[in-house]
Length: 125
Image (tube, rainbow, N blue to C red; front, side, top):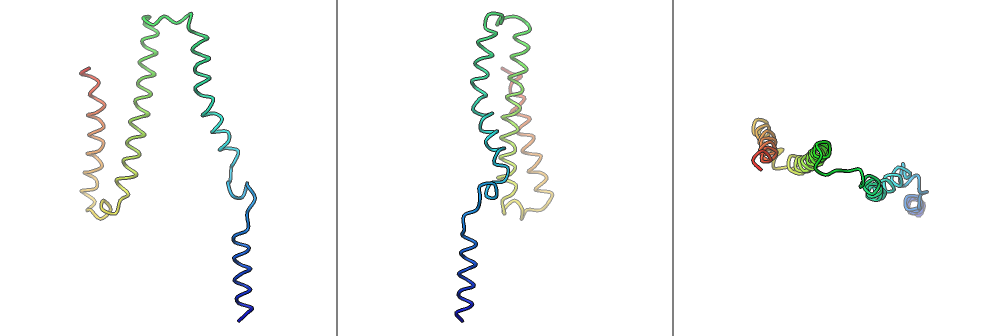
């Protein structure tokens, strides 16, 4: 009986032993690289803005086109992030999974129809 208890304690001791950092967090350097890139994005943008402020003409056709392209990219990223969050949170719920497939498909298309309507609201501005 004592042998089994000792074996259990040994197993717990091995399981609870602190592991080395790379084993605990695989690819730890990727996390540091991502954090560094995230923190350097804004200062880099400020530096670029300061560098081109004298040659930038806000009312030129190139500036308006460039601004429109950047705004459309940002809007697309926001709509995509919102839809992905909605799809993961909503369609993985047990209530939706119990629905018939046809109703699930209808819900799926309703979400994308709503996104299309929201995206088309820019036309009337």
